[in-house]
Image (cartoon, rainbow, N blue to C red; front, side):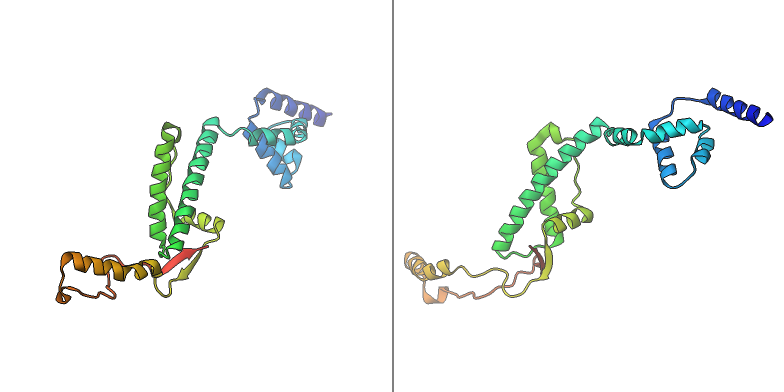
Length: 210
């Protein structure tokens, strides 16, 4: 008899302390039970009736769906704007990189990051106020994702950086002859420069290709 009284008094005490249960508390309760904790232990921890815990568990699907759909509207908008801006800058970057590959221009990580930042500013300016809150740093993390998405590989550059322009080479003798004639240049004023070295900025010895 005394045990029944004690149980009744415990339920009454819990009932007096009952407050509105937050969504976060409900999620915590669900996770604890799913991890294997006993419902009675969870009920004691949160000072709730066993039946209240059971009701929360029965509503698990509805509760979790509500949590998934309750992302702040402002955050969702910013995320969508960022996605649109980043997607466009990455498309532009891919086109630019392909053009560099066609011209056989080596691409270093730093060069790609600089170009990505440049494209970001262009795209952000294009969208104006709509993209005012969007930020981009061309970080290593971003580049690793971009590299994986575009299947890029870092390889060592071999041979000439760019192929010779055969059409221009064929046209040069006639053009040069015309220049010499018009300028009345003497043979002593004509020089052949086969190759020159440019050391103002060292070209990368590796590049990124698809």
